[in-house]
Image 1 (cartoon, rainbow, N blue to C red):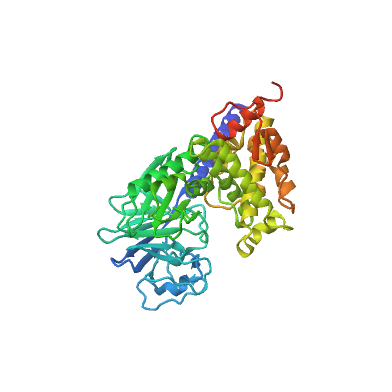
Image 2: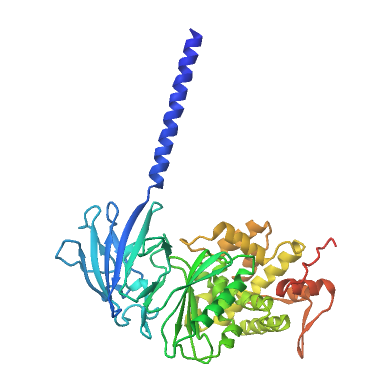
Length: 492
């Protein structure tokens, strides 16, 4: 009897486990099921009008949003498919009248710049015969996508017209299709249309998609590709791979100024993208000698940092624009140290009486750029030196950023500097970054670099910087700026 009962109990247990496993599989399958909203974007041959059809998988979102405040002014029509009644946009567009699995149709005028409410710059640029447009002026989408949602965009293009977009390309039979991912709707990004041919740059395991837009005179595309590849390789050399798996790179000729790249920036909507506005009349050697491309691509070493802490992203880029070019032989190590020192001096002279946090907040209003950029760089030099000393050269800012990239290269959230410094302490096992944060972000004084300079064997004299020939100090400097041996530890 007991045997029978035990057998029955075992059978019940097996059935219970089997049912639980089946339920888990069902739940997992449901969670993995993706709701894919499909957009089709058609542009006319004049590159002046976008016609968009957006179809929703299941229930339509409550409303659609666009990043630019001027997006409603660019709309010439918005309606539910098969409806004759237009929907008037405001700050958002209500989709209460859209049925399940329904579609909306809308049209956007991109023939001219619109700048009435949005003060963050023009969203529509005509670069020669090509069009560069912020997605914020035309991409109306849900405010937030859940973990099981994505958007697929198919571009319908006239003959001879190409598109460059920031999102992940999708393999298709001749169509131009992208998946947008779940980065926030208000993160800026741009799409270009024109008669360019997008080129692929493979560097450090990454795929960079380069588009060189129209100009008079035309930019030398081969040379622009070589310049971007060279700059990207410097960043990839930092820890053996480029920090992003893919990126959009746009080169727009026609910028005014005596520099080869008077204006450039990185944006993160969809995936990281570098935008370079160039003076194509400058000699190609100036592009290779310039710091701008290395600076901008170095931003990609970090995940997106929120605007309140831009000193961190600018500090990383400013520090490495000198270090990486010295390592690549674009300048001598001595010159790189001199450039860093001169920058620190400019930072000390900027924004007297303000904390770093206050200088960052007022950067655009009060022109406190030098304090923000160079104090960020100074903090990272201090961290780099301390970490190398503490670990006998086994760890550095390079290895810390590599570990950060391994764990936290997310594209769908912004990080604070405090979060990133805490994470850097976690991945290195050191308590260096948080301590530096606490010492300097709320301080009204520029960081004291005297201890760091002593460790590096750098002294300031009437004739400029003086460098010690002591072996330990020389090896530390070489480890940062070149291919020198790692520094010996305290136990040596």
